[in-house]
Length: 89
Image 1: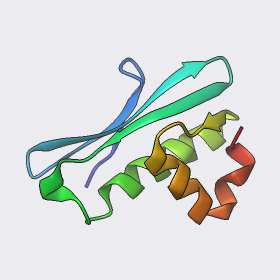
Image 2: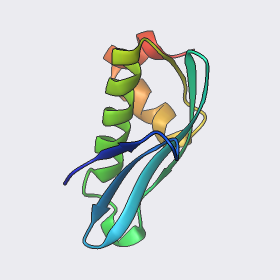
Image 3: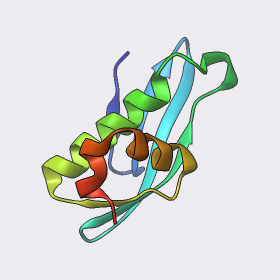
């Protein structure tokens, strides 16, 4: 699976089995609000959402950004991965 950052659309994207998967954010200065993670039901349980969120958080860390996890999936992901807590606001 290839994950692509699409900054013009403010999201990370992957196409799996012809279906679009996304982790979307809003950026304001040095803060990103991760507000939506979407994976079609047919692809659930394959780790796609986790990979999208991990890519977004890795990018945020590399850019020195803080993250507001308003998406419930992102919030749970960050709780389960303590190494991401330094990014959280």
